[in-house]
Amino acid sequence: MCWCSAASSRASPFSIRVQLALKLKSVEYEFVEEVFYANKSERLLNANPVYQKIPVLIHDEESCDFIVEYIDEVWTGNGPSILPSDPYERAIARFWAAYMDNKCFPTMKELQTASGDEAKAIVVGKLNECFTLLDEAFVKYSKGKAFFGGDDVGYLDFALGCYLGWVKATEIIGGVKLLDESRTPGLAGWAERFRSHDVAKDIIPEALKLLELIGYVQEAQ
Image 1 (tube, one colour):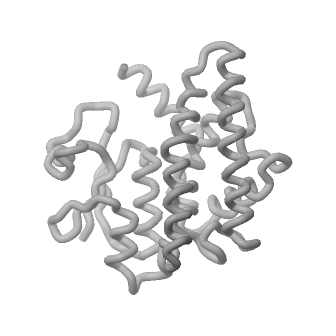
Image 2 (tube, one colour; image 1 turned 45 degrees about the horizontal axis):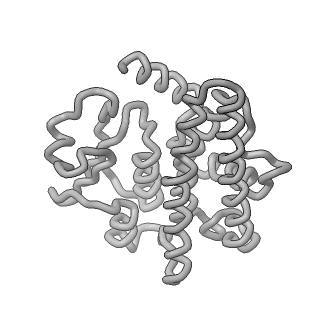
């Protein structure tokens, strides 16, 4: 049995990423909610005493880092592989996952708090650059197939797909279109296919629920 702790409303992109991996591998697990903007629970502090962050996966009473890769390696016989088998392709997938985590998502959060038209325009320009590069990456690495992982979803699909609810919420907040069929046609088409995939369709949160969560966090602060 696995123990996975995730943000309230299952909204954390990193928790979503773990849920996607567990579902692809058909792993049974207990999902334990953690309200990330409230006091951290004793269970979370015990499971992750160093970083004190979600998500946490407990397998056979031991906590694990690099959770998605751990899931892929432990449950090799369950479903398709999440990470590419080729070392170069694995490195490329990790690179673009880090780009989304460290560049695009923080910029999306900037747009949520940007004040004034000029400030918003600057952030939108940064985001357009981010998603244009991701669109180019999709065209290159999908090799004409439906997903980054090829015919089926894989590591990079999860790494980007876990943010799709937040992308839509950011579009609503900023009054912009980040995944545009004319500017990022490959990525826009991929996003629709990923949302409707059996692994993702019940896990990716709705944008309106995320907007409600943003309101709760702002009130709590």
